[in-house]
Length: 166
Image 1 (cartoon, rainbow, N blue to C red):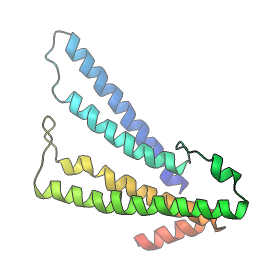
Image 2 (cartoon, rainbow, N blue to C red):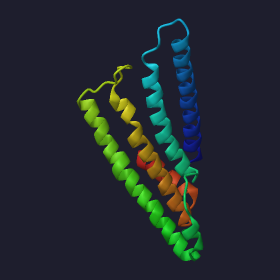
Image 3 (tube, helix red, strand yellow):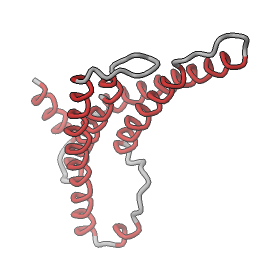
């Protein structure tokens, strides 16, 4: 699981660096006696979407999302654990239903309609594929959190993932 987190961290850093280069190029071509680049704004927008969605999954993994835990911290330990299990389970259900399944439907529809982006002329299915990807990561991270919370070992979820992918 740590390997997935590290790969995600490197990928997010690369996307951010690419976005900085893209926006810098956009600024330079706007103010220098060159013709402004037509694709940079669209690329920056799509990179921001990817960074936002994958960054959300990364933040979920690291438990860095903004949370109001005043109420849950006041609960007795046994009830607090049950509330955490419920919360993680609801996150899993949302990520699986809305992001993974809904995202797959969206990607399939845009591929079927052969929808292309305006400036970059790339299939919108590629742009939208980040939705089921980040949803899948959130599902995976939710399962890992549940296993840890229920007293299981980290290795069990890694074995389950390897078995499922084989």
